[in-house]
Image (tube, rainbow, N blue to C red; front, side):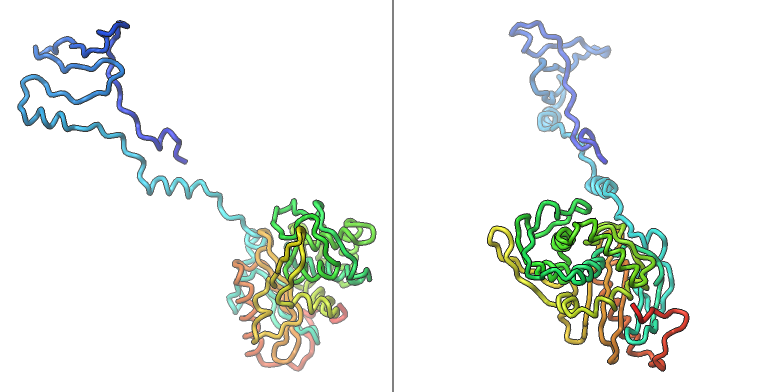
Length: 370
């Protein structure tokens, strides 16, 4: 980092002449002659700008040059030097957990950009493709699928009106939301926004309005995970903003298959958009976070995206591929769009792969009772 002093040009040094405190001190003063016997140049009194003065006996041309000579300020640091210093001061991008532990180094024949990938035949439990499928990682907003499951199992009225409060503001990652405190929506609308637009305040409000409050809600999320056989999964809150919400691809395949039994989860997670009345009589429109739901070449029955820096870009889906329901799980993709590209690569690979006899893969089967 270049200091302010280094970035500024140095000012020319001033000549020193002792002053007497009278008006005569402002006049130029001739100093002693040099040892050559020639008179030295006249120095100006303190407080006046220094001007080049031709020495006595110099030629008219030299005198003119002396009068035209300007004192230039010191050169500022080269622009490239300043730019390099600025770049050096920018902190390095934070690695995801998958990057930090080297999961991206694992070989896969499709050269996926996701550290974790899994494709499972939802009808038979056959594992069609897997890469680091048992690695336990943060899952970001994929957590909201479990939030939706717990909300719907509770049987609370979907028409009940819930209020966004200060308690729903994100103090984990300080993300923004267009649902200001004071916004009143139905539980149905909150659920819709949490699944489709990954709305964090909506998801937290759903947990707060659960019988027994937020702590009881999170406890039920973990109980449900155990019931589904999700042995590598743990939740600490309903949004996925915390990196302590963790799971594996194998466990998430179980969650997707369980969630797909609920028509509302399928409908809301794949809806294209929703408009609601927010605080201040504002009309606010939200769109789906998954660009694939609007593609005609995809038949998606359920989906959920997720992102925090520790988790990378995540995506789970259940889609029809070659006429059969396939669960796709992609965790810790290196770019926002890479997860969608990886989903396309997985689908293309499955379509080009010869169909098996339908029997589950004995060594890598995802349980069909989940």
